[in-house]
Length: 325
Image 1 (spheres, rainbow, N blue to C red):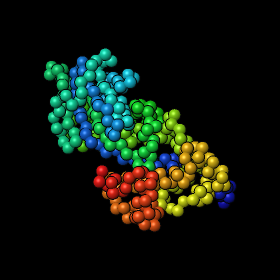
Image 2: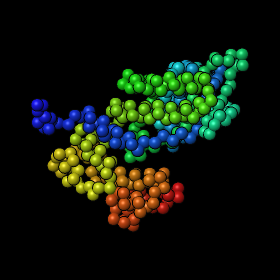
Image 3: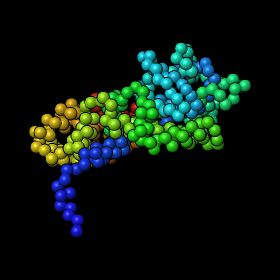
């Protein structure tokens, strides 16, 4: 007979707790592709992508190399099979060599392939099959309750840094390379979905690796006991949370919990709950078109009026204005 009594008293595995918290928080992540381009160019070339802080930019190099130059001058070399996500939508350029002057992407002639996908080709007709080939996408990047993380992300996130930890990404990249290079029937729809998967994998890998040098509430993900509290808050934001109930989730006294929570996240527990609810409310009203009554109910408010007052007090605007925006 196996004795499980010691297992009952064994501390929860910190790695499992952290993974559960990450899974809980990533449920709200959405990448909505707005426009994609298959670009085939002969050197010398330079393509400039404009500054749009509300959009993320994704690039996959099917045949390289390509030089990525950011607005501040940083240079990255992208080889065949490399993928990169720029979560902040900063101005940047893809170049055939570091000393090339770039032209805006809008100045190139684009032929429509399907909805949201076009093809740009500027190659020497005598050199078919040569030159550089890459696939680019402009995306709406929404992390839901994790939206504060976007501001903490590096300007350039390369998939190559994750391959050792997440080798399952490699077959996806290989599939992207085949689809972009062969341009078979229906490739546009397939590659856009693969691009979304790779982008989401880059974000997940960054979070799993500790979010780089990011601080603040991200540190709570590394603390198993605080992680349990965060997971519970995000799983059930409408519960009538108090400092006492959150402390019970952590397994600590109210004073110890409140002090630790404030030190790690930079806000008080109740302020965190309020901010979380208002971010969710904004998302549900503007993106999901949920009624104010339903939002109020899901977030634990006794009435739509009580919710509306709280929403305006925290955000400075009314739910109706958010819906019409």
